[in-house]
Image 1 (tube, rainbow, N blue to C red):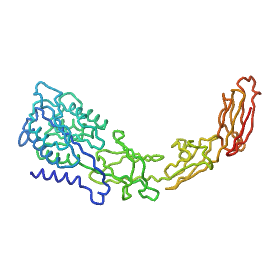
Image 2: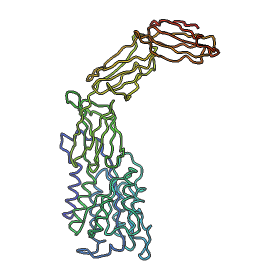
Image 3: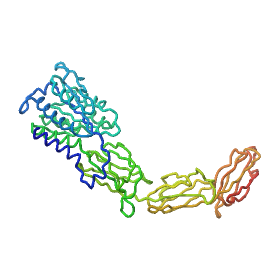
Image 4: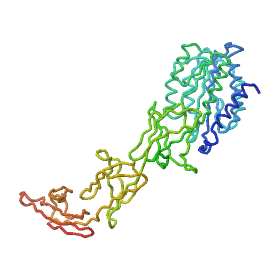
Amino acid sequence: MSKFLKLLFLLCILEFAGFNSSKAQYIKEKKTTRILFIFDASNSMNGIWESGKKIDIARELLIQLVDSLEKIENTQLALRVYGHQFAFPPQVCTDSKLEVPFAWNNAPKIREKLNSIIPKGTTPIAYSLELSGNDFPACKNCKNVIVLITDGIEACEGDPCAIALMLQNKGISLKPYVIGIGLDMETKKAFECVGKFFDADNEDRFKDVLKDVVKQALNQTSAQINLLDIYNKPTETDVNLTFYDNSLNKRLFNTIHTLNKQGNPDTIFLEPKIQYKIVVNTIPSVIIDDVKIQPQKHNIIIKPAPQGYLQIIPERGNNYKGEKFIVREAGKSQTLFAQTIGEKERYLVGRYDIEILSLPRIYYNNVEINQSKTTTLKIPEPGIANFSMPSEGFGSLYFIRGSVQEWVCNLDQITKAALTLQPGNYIAIYRTGLATKMDMSEIKEFKVISGRSVVIKF
């Protein structure tokens, strides 16, 4: 085994064991890392580079890399080759083939294929990247990585940058790793938009680049989200977290925040190349913006999110079963949540305005929610008002609150109605639809008592 191979294998092992024992307790099941190698076998790879032909040097070092990767758990490999099926000229811009698809224990097939490749064709990089979107079978717990190894620029008028961005936007893969073999400065710049570019300007540098790419591809950078209570302890949990890629303004995934068996925030594995925005879906939500993940470390992300509970229940009976009330931040008009009477819901610690959708509406302002406690409000048991009209017409119902007449609802085009009303004094006004004079309007005053019925007949 060469010194390079030994070093590479050791680095890969260290990457998987790179957490100390105090952090190991947080680690849950790792994702499967799937690495697709897109290998340049165009005619230019026959050129001499340092100690031999480019194709021979690249083939030998990639085979060494495959040798080491087949020993790494939770890793699958695949090989796509372009420029190897049709001799140039003429230019065949569809010369790209998935030679070895993803599978477990397929390293021997990749080695065999690499050893049989003869460079002869053109360089359809964009086309190869586009086809690679179908090279990754559906997988719920996989990290997809593309490693493009090339000695030349796109030769078929495709747009590798646009295709690479499309793969990211569709969630197929992260930014490709691009390894340029002996490229000039202008060509190097052309690859900067495709993915993370590595310049292999000599044979020794190519070895180092392969090592760096593997190190980053296999990286299992971890993080925990500490949601702090008012005592600055990470006790808040059981809330949905939404992760976004800030640069693409794209939602990546959701997960429910969890405490592990030790009572600590559980660990997730994140891609360090992404700058995240995390939305903590409390009521109201909390945003953790511009989260930068340090690679090869256990990252701790901290955000205050102290919560308490709110519940509204009737004093007696179940007349409000299924009815809603609106919760807003104190002094603000935007609705945060429409909560069901009788149910309990969590809110951030603070003050809230409440509007109960009863008849008439009930308002509570500056209701305080405290850490881990339940604020309970009781509303009076309603009564029933039974309305009877001789014919369909037009009317309205008003609640007398002190000296103020407060509109409750209309009584239009009905002959009978039973309304559940809050206890108190009311005025109902009605006029038959056949009337031609305003003075034919009738007014009834009545009182609603909790748990009782009253009849209002016009």
